[in-house]
Image: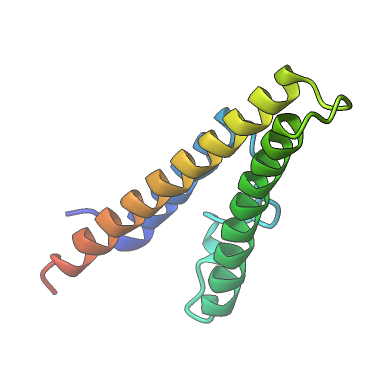
Length: 116
């Protein structure tokens, strides 16, 4: 059976690579996955990072909706390509967040099913 710490470190590395592939950098996640950052007292850091990531996904979605609304209202300062790019960024951000959630739930279930 895998060590829970190495399982979570691998999961974090996969999340970082998915974010890089989607073109979404996650500030504050550079040190995650190292042995120094996996301390038992890091709960507040994890919660803050999670809130920040969810907030940024929400901001990207709001920007996409705003651009679409402005374009639909006839604002000539925004082009259709800008609207499509912002909506696709919002879509990718939401898909990445859903994948991260699914992977985190799977990791939690794996850890909970381990025999002690």
